[in-house]
Image 1 (cartoon, rainbow, N blue to C red):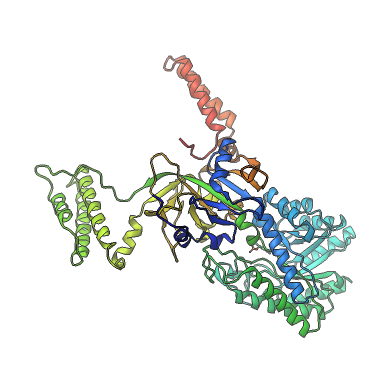
Image 2 (cartoon, rainbow, N blue to C red):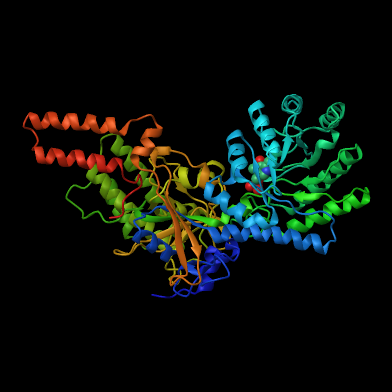
Length: 635
Ligand SMILES: *Cc1c(COP(=O)(O)O)cnc(C)c1O
């Protein structure tokens, strides 16, 4: 049944839109990755097969390192091109904020891909600083230090300066400055300093609180002037080399960026005129991702392309600097989301279907049947038409409500209730089938359509793999990996395997709108159905939690290779958590647990209540489970 075109699939799931050229659908209806310009497109299902042949089970994170490299290259090349075209006098000195994905392999890949551009790193905490000091060994690349800082943080930073790294300590809060000056004197190391401005322009969307008077970070106008004076008193005014701001992540509307660049450039030129030897203008993060493929200024999207983003920074800055006769600074950005989001996805298998309406219970009439059951049967005998379908639905719903009262009062029994509910779902089915023949679904039944849609139970945890969907209602593209040449016959939402009713995905791209359900195929008996959750490389990869003790997923790192028969190879496998690993994080001692189990079994054996051979088997099984993957095993 190959009755669906690629164009129809594309219109439904917008793969090429949010995929930014990295993802596509092939003629077999499989999702492919175009990880690089070398080699053929790689069907993700082939990566899954290869993974399994190496003993790695689902659910799994698949990382395409070529995408990471490509994104690093893209941002650097775009800045170079626009800087050239604008005859801008400064350079681009970008940094990657490791908070967005601190995985060592991700950071190493970014450093390596950015080597020739002197692409640097940014840290926002002591632990991140420790990583950044050890891994950013390119002395021509910047290391930018943000976040709140104690004496240890500042001392580590000075140690980095002493080792020859280009470390810029960004003062986020005025009180950091006297602390830093004291330590600088103590160690006789002169720091390079950046000042973070508290911007007045209104941010928008979810991260609007990153600017304005109540922002957590940044110096007000008066604090900036005091900072310059204090540095001057210490003969260190020349150490202020960078001006920084960050107006929040996922800037959806390009106008917000334009306004921020203008305000930032004004502050920059003012500080320059106060005598600071400024060299860098750091526009922070915020470059967004087109999650829903709409390219609009909604929360899940952005109304601009990378080119526009870069041009607005370069030309905006140039204009103000030229007006104020201030030399063009080097430009720093701290893009994290846009660099990492595309490179990783979660693959999960559908393990079951949860249906609301159940219609297969035997409802044959019996003698002395309760009147409510009979009434419902009569509703079922009606044929809905355009005059009565609403009435049938209302009436049936009312009878069902009465029946539930009757059941709670002990008037009808469980079997009667089962019959009545089964008949009710058949009535609803009939009404819905009729309503679907109408030009548009009547408003009164639209919610019902969603309420009735089944849920596909998928082998993963929202709390581990899609934390932002749970926390801030973030849309992530969810698409079946196969059968995209077949018309999807159902709409459904996705439930995870945690014991938590919040463990669901109910925000999807569905044709030209965002919907609580997605079009999906009916499950077939003997074919596994795989679903990909895409664009999880930024934040989702590293923000997951231990809810229900599922823990980290199996993970494979994939590289494209034109010379390989399959066009790719798996470079590294990182096994996900075993039960004993997650239990240990909660202070359990798995060895001791196994001993306790063994003791109980031995007692039963010695009392003759269990055969010794069986006893050993149970204990071995318990120990096996301790050392196995926490997620559901495929059967
Ligand atoms: C989080 C953060 C970033 C990264 O922002 P993205 O929107 O992911 O690019 C950059 N700079 C600072 C100071 C941040 O706090």
